[in-house]
Length: 453
Image 1 (spheres, rainbow, N blue to C red):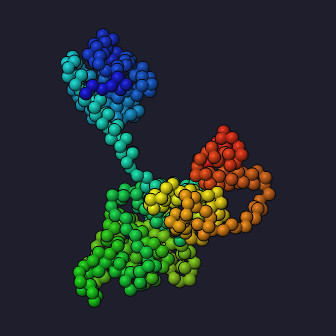
Image 2 (tube, rainbow, N blue to C red):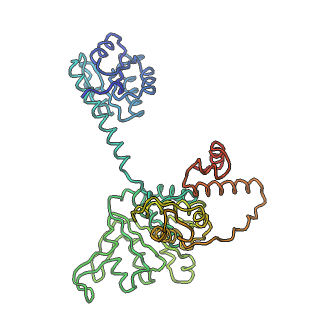
């Protein structure tokens, strides 16, 4: 397969006669030429060639190799995927091997055979195209680790950036927030963005399992350890070996088990219930709770030393009522998802329903919103969901802010109005500008000034 003309080949050769010979030999390729390092860099930046053939002896050091190796390093720094074919003299095999060790694709001794050079250049093109297509497919099919989280709130976006930063480490992360704020979504996103993503993500709710069973659930048990223990069973910690373990509602962990969990965090070994053998486990711990662990520690219900072990990275997740515009944004997304699941034609929220969603305090946070929208998509008579379908009613408007700085009040009001408008119209800039009574360029300028994206 002959490469298309759009994929260019750069020939770097200071001997003009040899340069013409190489260009003539490779006439079926879209060739560019350069005679020294500077002109080669100009062509490199201008055309980004897929393949480069180059002589190591370039002016002003035409009898040496310093300029050639300098150019080779700059080409590979510009784009490591560029295939560089080095042309050398008969007695320069050491330099040729050094070039390949630096990252050159291949080398040819001069004088070269045109047919062999053509074949080598064509193979270099093929490899370049395969690598580029493979990267494109990886990007197309690589899911976003935080794809399950939707937000326009600046604080939650900051949390997402924090999650991405700490994902590559093994630091223990504590997620604090009310029930239903998306703690498990963030924990799964942390796992998905980490080097452990190919291994298991295991979650256990410390409040949902009776105290007398929780130890065996966490640490496992040996056969015969207690009545009914018919076989050796792995615990959640051991099951997550190599991956991530989420300890949800860690504030409800019984006090006697806290000491055993602390020992595991210190030693990274466990003993199954009824066992005597220490088992090494490599697992990343993510814990979550809606409780104030500091207050529990002062009340003697949570060990302070365990808290400090768990709180290497603490992330506070704001409730839905504090995320400006997110309630409407999520409501639109839930309507689309549940309408598709229920095989109903395209359903939408009425303007009245959107206003009700924006004003509701959502004590149950995202989980409450999700459940209300799911029920509404089932129960609504038509294709439009009303506030009655959602089980919501109009609420009294909030009191005005007491801040007296006019610039701050204006910026805050503009930010709040823009984010709310974008949430109401599901991100449609034309409808948002109409709703706000400004032109689209004005809306873009306001968003830029306020740091909104």
